[in-house]
Image 1 (cartoon, rainbow, N blue to C red):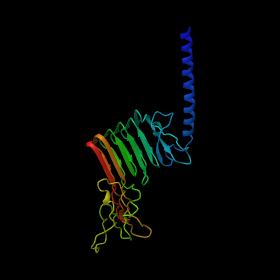
Image 2 (image 1 turned 180 degrees about the vertical axis):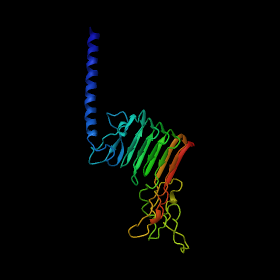
Image 3 (image 1 turned 90 degrees about the horizontal axis):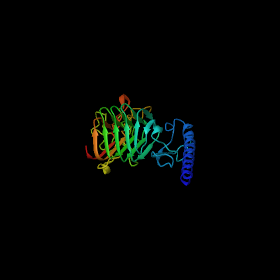
Image 4 (image 1 turned 120 degrees about the vertical axis):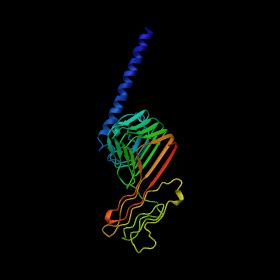
Length: 278
């Protein structure tokens, strides 16, 4: 008799706990659904842990979202969890920074992408497990930081920060003066387009003090008129931190933008790769 009473008591506790959790998650989901595009119109994001999400979450600073609102793998239109395995299978666009930390794996499936095509926008995935980009999968942003135990990039995949650089260091712009259409500077002087310019100089040099750990954006090229004061944009930044094996059968690019006929080209950005085996 005592055993039957205990079983009934435990069954009631389980049912009550399930209903209580479902109610809390339902309230959280309703708040998220009412926001505009969830991440697409949000502000900057930093890491945060939610007591009701088993996946690692991020914090959103935006007038349209409450502070500490969490974003799961599903919010990025993926399947799974950042603490187990998150599979991203569609193209997801952002217009602000996203920083995600998890103890599981991340896989961007073939032809899928996560993109924030805004100058200086940052995408960070710091995973304790593995990161994989499938065939023709891509990550596009001004800065991309990927940290994992192992990482692989399949055929045609890409990490691209070209022409999406933010502001160069405060001590210099690297952007040439005047309307000569000269190239932007960075690790070296930008090129000049004036044939009688014996110095052949464009934008200023900067970032020499950080050549061993380059982490500067490229500079914009110079324009050719008051209406077109700037040329191509500077390149962005990429950092790949892999504890064991990094396999690349795609492209990792941080090129400067083409100034076209109205200005000089922007200078390239920065790429850092740390891996035990490449």
